[in-house]
Image (cartoon, rainbow, N blue to C red; front, side):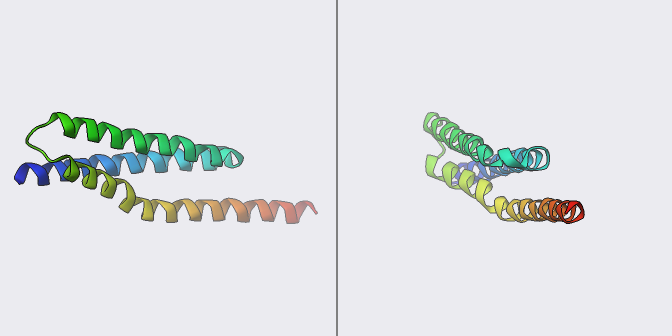
Length: 108
């Protein structure tokens, strides 16, 4: 049982890193090319599904760890931080929108 919990904790930590990578990618594209942001969602999904597939195949090879614990840890690691990261991305998007509105008002 201890191996399962440790595996879930490790998968959660790596899942948090994947969530941060997705946030960093989204933030970079949002700041540099906001019109291309919709394309980032596909890349983010590839990272997430790829990570889950890797966790599944690693868990399938390790005999003393239950794969379900690893998958639950990985999913929690990816989804829980995204609540915070989504709020941050929304505030960045709001700032970009406000800046564009000010520029358009000054030009009109």
